[in-house]
Length: 332
Image 1 (cartoon, rainbow, N blue to C red):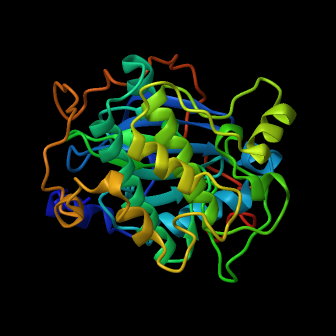
Image 2 (cartoon, one colour):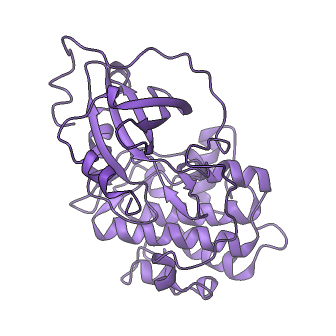
Image 3 (cartoon, rainbow, N blue to C red):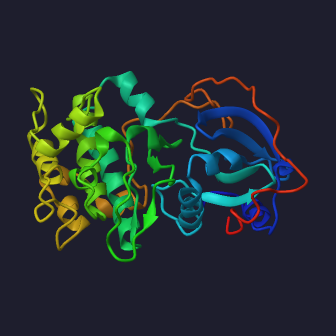
């Protein structure tokens, strides 16, 4: 965000925006109730990712609270490893988020292409997620949806966490909502117990395991059986799994919250000082003053080669006239 030209920031500070301010270039992704597009701001020529959500489907799928939370949380975040929101607006038919365009694509795609990551690469990505969680948790925000699909790789090879639809401000240190990706759910979520920031640290353990092994530690096509495996928490590591990483995974993937790293008195410090992270210079990392192991090849600011190709058959945006959902999204 800080690298945006001053005139772009001034432009984004306007009180009102509409879809006509942007040229839609290409679809970057699709979801249950909308799309993400590469767009170009007409006045400055700056590229952004525009997330467009159909109001009717947001309501139908009971996602109103999640979307309002997402907008509220994104509006206060400013951290190198979190995707930045420049502005948000709406019309009679859609809600729009204008986000940083992260050109390197999903970590999921890169991981599947590689099969698995060598330890140093996995360590860097895990360290950046750790700093992001530390930042969020200090602000009483639990992310709740860590997975390779929600980690983007920027032009310099750093991680950016995206999609804050499940993120929540937890004022009383607990929530009870069942949400997240099955493979990454912590036992306390499955058991319908009140939970807090601890679930993010469990998910970090799953991520570290998956990056190094090439697959998550608990899998099953049947979610009930998957949940039973998660609760039983019988960790098995493939041959050659880095010993220090294995120890950290065990410290994160424990159902006992009184022993889970990240959830103890020292918080993120226990994770950051673990021996697996010994090569990480945390001060240099937060300044992005390190060489990343992988830098995506890009032809320019509008390069979309790291994203899948989608059909461009979608209804036009910019609906005018009576807004049937005005009251529902009054706080957007």
